[in-house]
Amino acid sequence: MSDVESSPEFEQLSALYQRWVRAWLPAGIPRERNATCHDCAMAAPDASCGGEDLGYYDRGLKCCTYFPDIPNFLAGRALAEDNPGAGALRAFVTGADTRFQATLHGIQPGPKLITLYDQHHKQGFGRDPDLLCPYAIDRDAPEGPRCGIWQQRNGVCSTFFCKHVKGLTGYQFWQTMRGLLGQLENALAWWAILELIDAPDRVFSAGARRAGDRNAVLIAPDAWRFWPGTREAFYRACAERVEALDPEEAVAIAGQEARLYRLELDKRAAELRATEPPSRLRAVPFNVLRQAGGRTTIQALTCAEPFEAPDALVPLLRYFDGGPTPETIESIREATKIRLEPKLVRRLFDLGILERLPEAGTEI
Image (tube, rainbow, N blue to C red):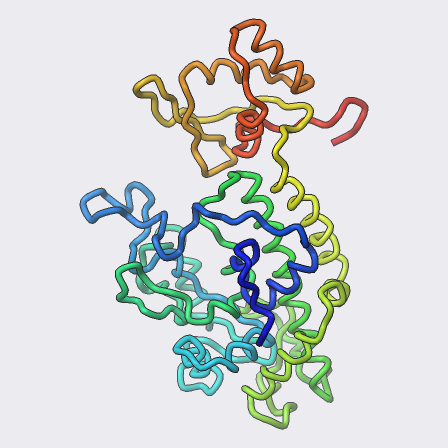
């Protein structure tokens, strides 16, 4: 499959999604340099530092402690590859491994694994080996496991970053991307079923949802009998159908909510590339994490990224009360002889320490 892009602006995404996002955002995506998969930024530096107490991950697990849904078209792409990750996926398709269930919609964890994740992921994410993804490979490598279906991973795995270069702004962008890809995955998987099954009305179950079902619409237990070929052939056919779609055509098929996410993605991407601070800003509550050596580390309530600043900066934040940003910067200079650079003010906004206010005469 030739749609894999080598540009660092897009390689953060799985292969099919690279092509789609390149069409949606031709200006590119700034790279998330702080989220380093091969040298996990969240792994404990050594065994003596109290890893769990400080929020660190086990280096042998990293953020691979998640059971992903693989929609039928991504499953078809993965099955076309010859690697250990595809081998694990094929075992679910053939029934050799029953921990995951293979349906017309895709491959998803069974009820037992969903219950395990729901009960343990808050404490065990990054730490509990029972939550390790079945597609993880090279588990004993010094740098920890790698994704065995990296080029075909789903929207959740493509958009999860433990750290964001632009803090809250980056987080909001990737959350929007995740929402869009999630809408596309669900809708296009159903669309592929309708394209390929001769009696689509007979593959859906009218029964109530069972515990562990992630899809709002259930597939009848005997749905596979309406497909004349093998399960692998069905998944590959789904991949062919979806790969042939234009990116905007895919959004149209996914419906109104996907279109709204698509519009929001443009706004979030523009924010991600912006370098100037918004025209009106207001300080919001934040936590003081530590003070030492003339430096204060603060963290917004809405952002996971801390910010270390000179002690003298913190009292200046009260000047940001919603007035025009250039006037606020000038007021600080006149009162304190300190001139804040717009780049620094932008950084405080990206980290959620300052929030945007609407222009005068407009509504939020």
